[in-house]
Image 1 (cartoon, rainbow, N blue to C red):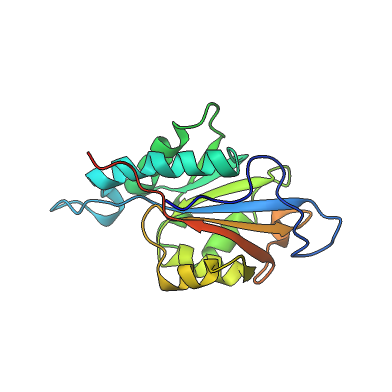
Image 2: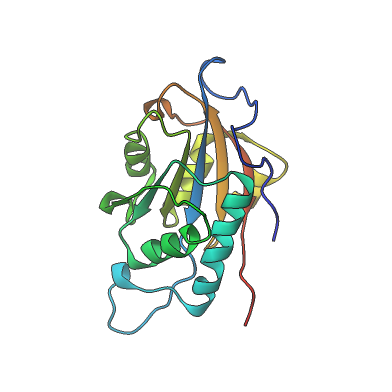
Length: 194
C-alpha cells in the first residue's frame, strides 16, 4: 500500500485555488470497496465482496493515519457504498457525521459538484464515498495539478477502495471549481488476504 502524504491536522500550505487568505480545505474521495454480483440483486443493492470487506477498513485506516477523520462524510445510498463507509469509519475513534445522499448514486461530475457545494462552510475536510466513473472524472476535473504521478495514476485507473486527496483554498464549499485543487495523494489501500 502506498501511504498518503500530509498527516493529520490542517491541510498543508498549498496556495492552489482562490484567495490566498481563504481557509485550506481537503476533499477525500473514496470509491466504494469491491462489490459482489449476486444473481437477482439490483445494482443499488449489491453487497461488498469478501475482498471489499477486507479493503474498506484498510481505506479507513489510511485516511485516519494521514488526513485524520473528516468533518463530514457524504455517502451514496447504494448498499456497497454504505457498507464501505461503515467499515472505514469503524477504524476511527470518533467517526464524523454522515449524510446518505441518493443523488450520489451513479452521479456524473455536475451532480457530484452540486452535492459537494452544499457542504457546510465549517467543514474543513470532507469525505465523499461513491462510484466510478463519476469519482475519477470528478478528481480529474477538480485537479488543476497533482503531486508526483497522482494525476497519471487516476487517469490510468481509479479502482475500488481508491482514495484521492484534493487540497484547495476557498471560503465555502460553494467555491469549489474545476481546476481549483491540487491532487496531493492517490492510493489504493488493501486489507490482508485471509
